[in-house]
Length: 200
Image (cartoon, rainbow, N blue to C red; front, top):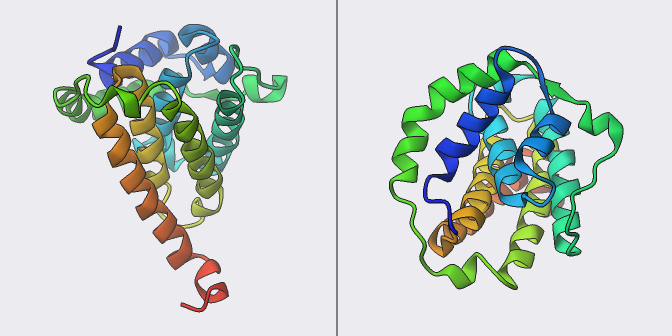
């Protein structure tokens, strides 16, 4: 059954898990289940979009690596997500998770009210493989964009919307995720050496 309040539910669950203490990637994996790509994409995408977590130096690049590992496994049809131990042990301050949930709650609630099951073929079946490719690309882009202030918000938002679309079977959101991904690619080209490399 599609989740029609995926953003609120994912953040609330993470904040409840933290309860003032550090929460690791492994904890979140256990919380959402070993086959839950959608919630993990939502949560890790929001991590780099919502302050104060996204401002932690080095975190967006680390999140990009984790997301890449997830999305590649999804692309190859793995039924269980595997991560190396040192990544499972990466942790985020529980206080920051709670603050992020408090700050983001009104905006997440607003977005959730616009989510419904529509154009489901764009968010299920073979379309999930295209979504995995998109997340892989955005995860890679996130690593160099950490050096550009606030730029990781674009790939982070695209990844979040992919996760929401998968959870809610909302193909319209998947289309928006593709549009935001194009913006993120443009930011990468414009604000990195790629601009001069392609002669712009």
